[in-house]
Length: 177
Image 1 (cartoon, one colour):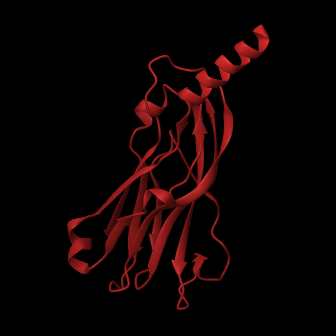
Image 2 (cartoon, helix red, strand yellow):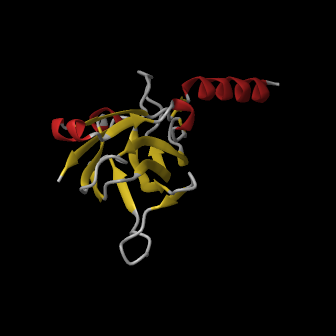
């Protein structure tokens, strides 16, 4: 009986301490990009990547959308920089956070296809971490894009008594070249 009670108490404490990855995404275009008609929109929370963080856990991240970029009325190439803006807070809770970033382009049928190089090969994998933020892309104009987290992994420190939400926050900057 005592072991059962202890197990239930520990389980309840862990469930209360779980923090879900609810990525906060916000973006901007520089002044030149706004004048040219590039539009950046954060993905809705229900499409965001997910994970559950709790004391000393090692786990994976379920992929999801971060941003949508509408450059259908802009012909030149554009630069895109994706940042994790709260790495200074995350280092107190996570030993590491590695996220695979992908870029998709909407085709004429409304389907999302992963972007490829000019010769048709898929681009090399791109990862964003708490140490290598930002990651950068050059994207051609006249298209609609989505920036996603495909997958990822993390390792939490033992449970911090201060609690709090420690989800990564993303920022995107889209500029003209």
